[in-house]
Length: 311
Length: 183
Image (cartoon, rainbow over all chains, first blue to last red; front, top):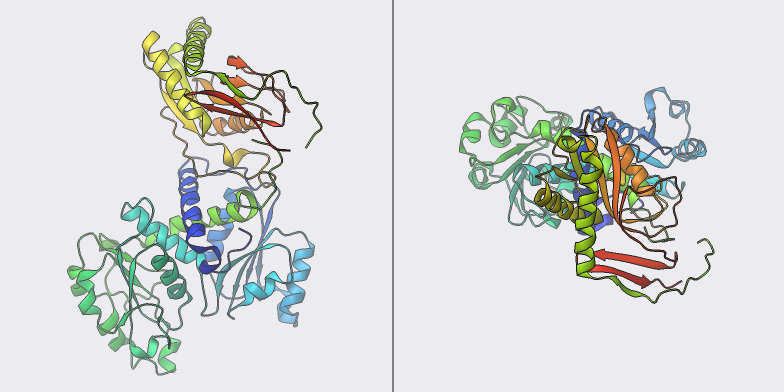
């Protein structure tokens, strides 16, 4: 595996391999000294052209726990503000010796474009509305762990609720969950669905809330109100928010997930700390382990190298 | 690959039978006990099988030690994150580390099926140090096939087996087999 730009690029076998590797990383993270020398001498560069706290810190932590060197590039303090092109930025940083770029960018497809300009591995940390593969992997891992599944997610009923149309998280999650055998339903107002939805859809959360194993809430972005895609936040909350009443109707074993940052009072109207099925903190914890697995796979274990001698 | 003179001393094939393996394991268990009884380290003895080939052997040695003397903790150690040849050689990860006791002050016997370059053992020494400071670390292998690249020496050996680097040594509970690897 050379890059992780999308889920479809690595296929279901790649997903399974990364989830298995994540088990090893979870073990490491539970030790008193959660650090291994696996990627000593490798350099990982975080290039974030969009704001992010958890994803950037999560990748940074992951790289450090594998003993890689980390450079973090924030657009706010960079020459991008002086008008440097993306290509020049990449080539300049690559010339310093970088083994992997972790890229978040507001435009879809940037990770593919960048991989033409450098020989380093590319990890997509979110590109436009397109994809966010490591988020989808950590979500799949969290479901697997919380439901006690050893490999696939056959027959697990997942409802993804919210702004599907503008959500890279939704897109990547549908790919991962369906690849692992889950039944995904998208719950959203028609205005917030893509023209060709990747899974069955409904606009009636109340009809599905009693029949889910996983309720995945997306962040409702306030700028959508200005675009008049939803009449008001209040109406959105009433129809698509997780209210106390809906939380009571969830099956006892059902998980409640959110990619963060949460809009309390919009998509979630109860305190997640009081929901027995909320695994939002576990998602963040597993995020570090999944990103360790991805870095290790791309920079270490999974390189296509000739077998020189039997081990 | 380094140029090694071919050593046609023995034809490829089965070199240890199932019975040979069983006898070698019994003898190694006795040797481990004898060596460590001397310094009254038996209470703190731990057997750690190196993933993946050493795990079954550690379990077998543990059963033998239990039969002769009494039960001993047996665990497993995955060293893939500690190797110095990550990226040079495909790594098979996703094996679990399971260490049942605190290793501080323990006498750890690392167990592997085949000792070859010594790089796995070097990685294992680093990995073990993450779990505490053992009083002593010893090494038990079923087959020592030579070609060391590091100053590492086994304490307990089932069988010394001179090999060519063009051969592959395959160890299972059913026996030890040498296979020719195509150049």
